[in-house]
Image (tube, rainbow, N blue to C red):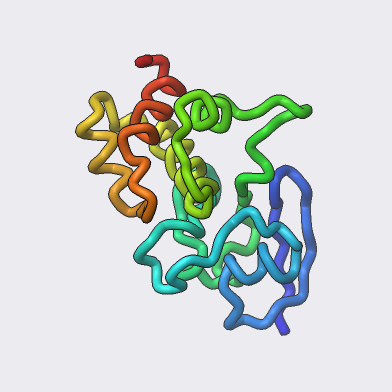
Length: 153
């Protein structure tokens, strides 16, 4: 076991973990933050995307021990004081989900995308969100939601 300290959704957590444990498994199994989804478990679908120090990370391929001292934000940590994050509200406004399984990863990835400041057009949003798969095909609504959150609606 290895000792790590993480700030998860604003709360400092000191944990003893198996050094082989993924960040995804730590969030879901050790911290009971089940909003982050386990999809392919191979880094191909994006369902497990969280923010690590503000950057998008596929948590199933990230060893938790490598993020000692980092700040992690999951879907549960985006809303503040009971008020939805603008992306969460935009996803509702644009019906940017069907089954909802990919939605937490989509929203966290979109938050990272907006923070990066690289996407200016719908085509750029699509390209930079291409690591997040939606099996239901809600892509046009997802792009519209992201544009709303970016102030481009």
